[in-house]
Amino acid sequence: MRQLASFLAGALTGALIGGITTLLLAPMSGEELRSRGRERFDEISDDVREAYSARVAQLEAEVARLRSGKKTEAA
Image 1 (spheres, rainbow, N blue to C red):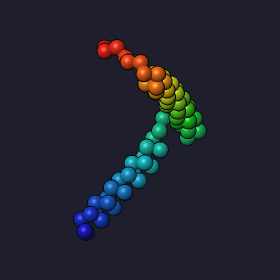
Image 2: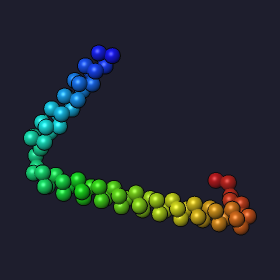
Image 3: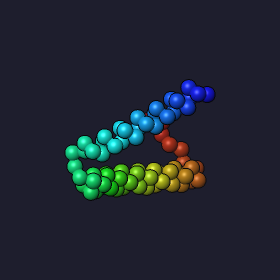
Image 4: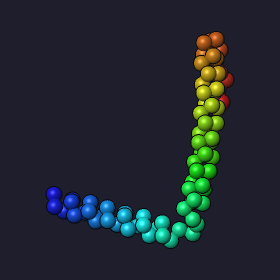
């Protein structure tokens, strides 16, 4: 149990030191970094929404096809 606590303390300390070092050595200001992160998040969010909408449309078409009793051609 003592080894696990020691490992976790070391991992936490390393993560903290790594995070601080990354922030201090970042090539851009904090505001620029946050702005870039926000833009990237918005891009990913839009991509996910588009993929979701496309998949919903595809599934709705499949459900309509199954309800009508039509068979699909083998590919």
